Image 1 (cartoon, rainbow over the protein chains, first blue to last red):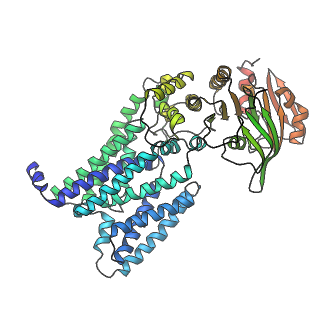
Image 2: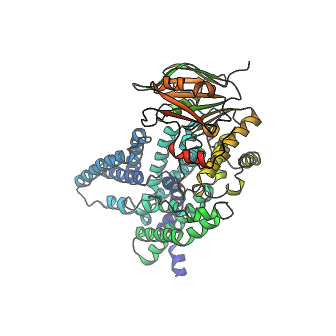
Amino acid sequence: MIDQLVRLLDYEFVQNAIAAGFIIAVVCGVVSRFVVARDMSFAVHALAEIGFTGAAGFVLLRLPPVLGLLTGASLSAIFIGALGVRARGRDNLIGVTLAFGLGLGVLFISLYRQYATQAFAILFGTITGVSRNDVLLMIGMGVATLGAVALVYRPLTFMTVDPEVAEARGVPVGILGVVFLLIMAVAIVEAVQVVGVLLILTLMITPGAAAERLTPQPGRAILYGVVIALFCTLGGITLALLINWPVSFFVTSLSFIVYAVSRVLLGPFLQRRAVRGSETAAEAVTRPKRSMSA
Amino acid sequence: MSRPAVRCEHVTLSYGTRRIWSDLSLEIGPGSFLAVLGPNGSGKTSLLRALLGLVTPSSGTVEVLGHRPRRGDPVIGYVPQRSTFDSDLPLRGVDLVRLGLDGHRWGIGLPNRGSNLKVTLAIASVEATSYARAPIGRLSGGEQQRLRIAQALVGDPRLLLCDEPLANLDLRHQQGITELIGNWRKETGGTVLLVTHDVNPVLHLVDLVLFVVNGRWAVGPPDEVLTSETMSELYQSHVDVVRVHGRILVVGESTGPGFELEEPHHMPNALVDHEAPR
């Protein structure tokens, strides 16, 4: 089996898939931490599906679908951000936008008379089909995203965990909310390459959600998220090459297993350890947990 | 006479057509302790937001330590109305306090010895060292509140704004938090503005009381403001101010919502097991 893997590495498409998978996983691991903490899974879904509409539109115009994906996701990020970042009915706004955007996507697909391979690729992922140029594009977008996260890291963390004080301390919460949606849009374009629009949550939610069961330290939670995303993405690609089932299937299965393990087995153990030494250890462990919607 | 810590001159604040309070004038000297009292929805929090530069009054002048309020003013420490942290949030007390120090700055901000020391000292000053490294969402309300105060004080402010810091705390924690705030004022000569629905836990520290009801207000030492005459005028109906066991109760003839200064659930405590301050 190892031999088989080493031989596979000679193929350019395998090298491309692994290189792209690596950078994509790092980006998703980092961004998912904030998606989970800011409770934005629905927005992730909306941005991805409107991204799909963008891609379908670009296919119709014979333009690269990746750019359409980026355009669709970014425009909806700006729209949702500008109108609804601070509004109470954020999810309503997202739902309305999402439905309209996806409706357009249906129209574009039906207008496109040929068999829409590219559209299906966007829905379910095409990591083993990426070219060298795609890889370079992924690296470029990935580095830009990570750079943007690093730049806004402290104020973004502040407004995520403690919005009232962050605002009082001068953090521009309105603008940063939109900036984060744009960061999310680019991360989504990356993740779509691996798992596609429909399974986007597996890379944008699971790493962050699993990581927060493992550590109470913000920095470490991001690191663990990256490790989990790398394991799921590269593991999924490898298994798909060996067994020849879809990459998306393996990535989603691995993420699910990682989440289950961290929640059921590791999480409770580590949490107990984290609270130990605190005066309230006994109280905290027995206190009923509020479950987090994700 | 030194510059006042907070000065309001003929300040009117309204949201849309709704007027929160009008023509408010007050001056708080440095080192004073002002309690802001009044029923729910009377705009107590709005006053803090105006001082923080988050809302702009429709008319009048507000000054904080000699200048116009501006967002992110480092001379102000702020303890917001309590909101709970998710129990799974990867955040510890030390992280929360550190955000109070440099969370508004750009970049990742790697820890350095200077900021670590400030954070450690702030946590020690609120006696939270033993649980500062536990997940904050799993701490009790009183423990979280101590860390919030450390977060507000870590940047060495000269004015501390607290919004209902004692709400939903048991008596022991109320006294602990009150003592922390009192000590900070004594040691640094800082000014405190504290919004509360119950003045009694902080009565022994308070120099000035601002009582706001439906846009009307009165300001002065507690003995002058918390009287039946002043309260009846503010509420525009007959109100009795009763002193029992060193505590002040404001009781009206008609008890509309938010009318009582004293929350009913505090009363049994007060009469049974709480020794009155003073």
